[in-house]
Each structure stands twice: as structure tokens, then as C-alpha cells.
Length: 388
Image 1: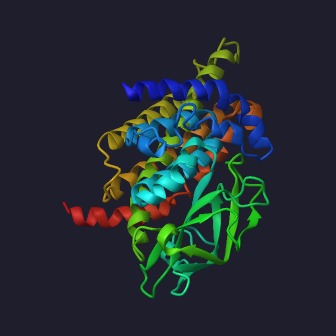
Image 2: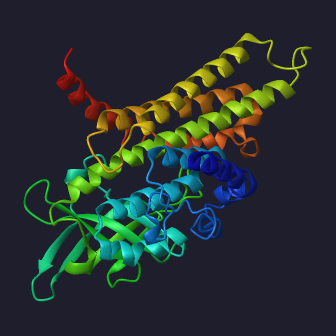
Image 3: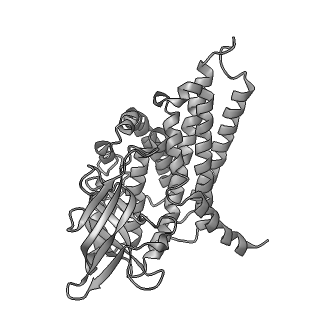
């Protein structure tokens, strides 16, 4: 019952509020914070979708619900959805799974209601897919009973809303020991001394309504008792567990993009007359583009929801199919968007007809949250262990 209600609520807000603003906010490369806040607890409550009600969340820790929210928002505006993902999955869900009761009580209510916009900091200027190559580090100060964080993080979604100040709150991964896996997760709040915006990253190919920034940490002091998430040097567990649901959410975004492109193709093909025919459905090339796009989209949708129906978000070890579903959906959504442009010709090449923006947005899915190549690398050892 809840899934049905969630679907109805997401469809309603997508068509009545997300769709009308998408073109303008993507043109101006600005984030619609007021609309984002409407997703909070006081309205439909999907900012804290997986968070218990005791922390001001919706209390529905279900991977299918996560997928539905991302599919529906991406149907209208993938960039807006990307900021939603960074907040609701990379910050809110991550802290809910890995934080202490005191941390969740302090930081989740504001994030769930939308008064705080959050994100996660993992990638660096010289460490993306090679996450263990990160250089950001934190040293423990025994006298102050806390950690001093230094480093730079790159490509951070929601890193800045204004272009000048940092976003409100982040989970930040940093090196805390000599071993390769000695990484710890910290809470860093906007306004902390030494925490600044290096640059707002503009003129991106796609996802233009989702703010991206470089963030700089210079001797940022983080108290041990309140701002260390999980165990010291135990951040890799938090990271890997959260990457799985992130990739499922990104795959669901691809499903939303593909579904919208198929819908746009169907409408255009039915309305456009050519060569004496009342529509384009009698032309074999168009038939192929639409039919193949629909079947590719349906295959991806079945993969996404087959995975989410059995996914325990409190567990780890679901890497094979979380990698696989994103690998498939990312490439599929870009290919479907490309076909949609081809079907619509010159009209598909301009912003008014949506599909060119969806094509640009879809490309990010082949890079963010794990490149296609990283998914290949991650999946191969699983196949080897499975044998014949």
C-alpha cells in the first residue's frame, strides 16, 4: 500500500512541480532550493524516506521505494534528482545506517525536513575511481580530543548552493592511518572554520541544475565524540554499503530518463506527418528506434526492480548486481535518449523538446557513482569466484 501511495505522490509532484521548472533552472545552472524543501517531512517526506520516524523521517527503509522516487523525479528533471540523491542517499541514508543515536538525533531531523542540504565528499582532484588513492587526511589531536582535517574534495554535488558558501552538511572520507584502508568518515558542517568553497564548477555537459563544487578543508577541527561516524579507520565499510544503494538509485534515474524519452518519441511520431503519411509509424527506421528503445527500457526496469525487491539495505555484499544494474541502465538511458534525438531530428536537438537535455544528463550516469569501467572491474572477480 505504501509503495502505491509513494508512486502516486511522486508522479503528482513530478508533473505539477518538477516538470514546469526543469528547463529554466537547467538553463541558468541554478538549484531550486525552495522546491527541494517541499520534498521534506512537512510535505511528501521523501528527503528522509529511509529514516525512522523517531528522527523525523518517513520510516520506509525499502530499496524499491528509493528506486521509485529516483525514477519519477528523473522523468522530469534528472539534475534536480541528482541533488536529491546526494542529500537523501549519500548523506541522510548513510548517516542513518552508520551514525550513532546522538548523531542521528542531532543531524537527521533538519536534513529530513529540508532545512539543511547535505552531501558526501569522496572524490578528489586526483582520486576518483581510485578512491583509495585519496590524499585528504585527518590527524588526531589528543589535547583537544578531536581530529584536524586537511585536503580537497572534487565534484561534490550540493557542495555549494550560492556559489560562495559551502553547502550545509557533509559526510567526508579522509585518511586516518598508514594502511591503505585506514579511512574514516567524518561529519563536516557548513560554517566550520577552515571549510571553504574552492570553486563552483560551471558549464557542465549535463546535470546543470544540480550544483557541483570543489571543497577545501584547511585545519578543520572535528570533535571525536560528535563528528566521527562509525569506527576510526572503519570508513570503508560505510562507503561500500552506501555505494550499493547509490548505484541502484542512479540506475533508477536511468530508467526515468529512458521512460521519458520513449514517451517523447511516441508523441512526436504520432503527431509528425512526412512523405504524405499522417505520422511516422509507417517508416521502418522510426519503428526500429521506438521498439528497441521500449524493450531496452523495459529490460532495465525489470532488472532494477527485481534487484530492489530482494535488497536488504542494511547488508553489504550486493555488489555484483548493484554494479550490473547501473552499468546496464546508464548505457541504456544514453542510447535511448540518442535514439529519441534521431527520431525527432532537428527538434530533438533543441532544449524545448527535452530529449537533448536528457541525453546530456544521461552521460553523467556512465561516470558518477562509478564509471562503466569500474563496474567491469568490480564484477569480474565475482564471476571468477562463481566459476562455472
